[in-house]
Each structure stands twice: as C-alpha cells, then as structure tokens.
Length: 315
Length: 145
Image 1 (cartoon, each protein chain N blue to C red):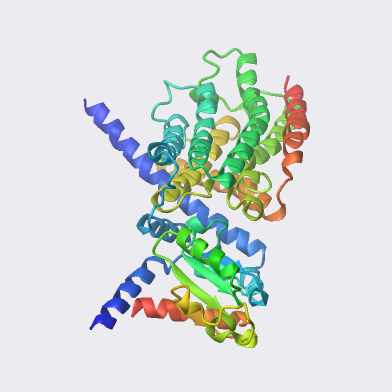
Image 2: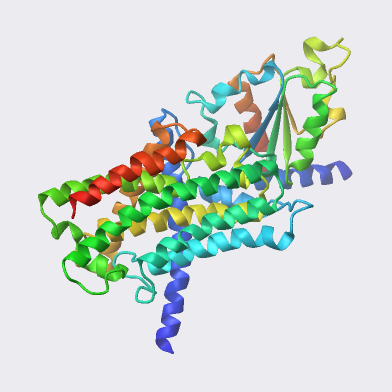
C-alpha cells in the first residue's frame, strides 16, 4: 500500500516535472535559435506565458466537427506523451520500467501523432485534412530509420549473450560503447548522426515540418485548434521532445556517474540539453523545409541507407 | 460610468493576451512592407512575445495593413469572426484611418472603424517598425494601468 502511494506520488512529480522541463527547453530552444539568427529572442519563460494565455482563451469547436473526437484527441496526445516518460529511464530510474520494453515504447511514440491526425480529420477543415495526410506520410517515413537505429543496441546486447534483450533497463545497464571494437565505434557514430535527424523528423520540426507548413497549408493539422485544446497539443509537443531525447539517452548515451540522484539528474539534464540543441535548434535554424515529394525519398533512401551502413559496422 | 466600464472590460481583455500576442496578418496593400523587418532580425518582435501564426483560430491579434477594398473587407470580417476571443485588431497605415491617399476612390474603405472594432491605429504611409513597437508598447501600458 505504501509503495503504491509512493509510486503515485512519483508519477505526479514526473507529470508536473516533465511539463515544466519541456516548456523550459522550449524557451531555451527559442532563445538559442534567435541568437543564431542575430536576434534577441523571447524571455526564457515565454512558453509559460503562451500557455497561460492559451488557457484563458476561448476554444472554438467547428460546427461540423464531432465534439467528443475533437476534444478527445488533444487529451490522447498529451496523456500518451506523458505516459512515455513512465517507461523511459530518467537519470537511470523508470517508474514502470519492468513492465514495458523497447517495442512498446516505439509503438507508443506513434500515438501522439495519431491523436493529432484524428483531431485534424474530425475538424473538417481542408487545411487540417491536408496537414494530417502529410503527417501520416512523415510518420511512415521516420518509422523505418527509427526501427533500424533502435535495433542496434538490441543486437549488441543479444550478441554479448545477455537475457531480456528488449528491456530498456537491460540496455541502460550495459553501455553499448564498451561492447564493441573500433569498427563498431564508427558504426555507432554514424547511428548517432542518424538519431539527431530522426528526432527532428519524429517531432516534425524543420526540415521535416511538412505537416505544419505555415506558409503553405496554414498550420496544417493544428489549423482549427484554439485555446485549451491547442494548449494541450503545445504541452504534448514539449513533453514528447523530452521523451524522444530521453529514449535515445537510454539507448545510446547511458554514461553516468554512480552518485546520488541530484548529480545524476544534472548529468541527464546536460545530455538532454545537448541532444535537444543539436536535433532541434541547430537543424531547425540552419535548414529549410523539404518538399513533400522529396521527404519519403530522404527518409527511406539516404537516412535509412546511413542507418543500415552503421548497423553493418556493428555486426 | 458606462464608458469606464467598457474601458475596464477592454483592459481586462488586453491583460490576458498582452504577454504573448500571436499575430495574424491580413494585408493586400503596401502597409505590410514595413512589418516584414519587424519579424526579421533587426527589430525582432519575438522578444516581446509576438509571433506570426498561420491560422486565425490561434491568433489573438489581427493586423490589418493598408486600405481595404469592398471585396477584401468581407474576408477581413470572416477572419475576425474565426478568431477566438479575447481578440484585438490593429490597423496599420493611414488608409484605415481616413482613406489615406485613396480618399476619393470608389471602392476602398474610408474608415475601418465602421466595419471592425479597431483597438489601435498606427498611422503612417506605411508606418515604420519603430511606430509599430510604439503602438504595441501603448497597448501594454494601457493594459497594466
């Protein structure tokens, strides 16, 4: 009984902590992106102001949209984004770590996007329809390189004869950089480069933001959302960023000092910052959007090719 | 008394959005030429929390730049109706104030106030970025008083 209450309290802490941390990273991302473009940038707490404003605004539901689907889909997105963080180790510890494995997490990562697709289709707006079709194309695209990249640590754990290979805690416990030779290190470096691009694609940020192409299809899937519902998607995006970065920290960069939780969390924070900085801020600022026709070719052609080459190095 | 009440209501409306104003731009004339540098790196409106958004549903502020014709005012009204409240309207340039240099044209709108509830006029032909920031700082001051 006591354990259960403790677990629930930790879950509550993770929910609020992840929202605050996600929004904080959003602020950092916006400031750094502004600095790279020779701008001053917004204040650090700007995402919180945005959120506060969105919460007091009116949420419009289109007349022809089924209300319950339209209002349920942001909830699904937000809930699953937070649920992901229960399974992924944060600074070495995960709440539901023993009950879920890597395959479950990769499937769960699809659901926030699917929630957005559902809401956009139900909103009955042509822009939102077009946006959600593009989002589905994007999701089909990034799944392939994501699967190849995620298989590399699993394969390395399997090759070295450990049991329970798909469990994230097993992968986290064994540093894969120590399990391979010099050729494998090259392979892992290639995979790390692929990861940064896959994260950008997963979160559909520039250059993969075909679904929300502001200048083409008016915000795409989010075109009809306003107020509280938009705020939920806003938080879901921030939390999903954290989850995606945490997953790849667990898979590829699990180094940490065995110390108390505070120090370990600080190192985790630094790693998060590094991954989010490269995969979101840097790539977002220095590139422009892909054409929709070139998107799938990029994912299934070049990026998957690099991922497979990296995989072959580690064999 | 009544006027005070209306002002009070307007200020409350402003106060809610004033820290992060999401802007939807509606322009069909030259009034927009000087708002592009406002978005860019020299004047950078993001430091005040202003960002341009693609969809009127997400916007708090409708910037109407330059003159409106009989045809385009219908679309402007449609955009205004699509925005979620609280919402503010900023009219950019001399044309929405008095018709500007098109004062004797047969198909332009002479006073935007007759069609939409304008919160702020920024006159100029077109207004400089400094004038736009001045106007927005007035909005912020008005809401905090």
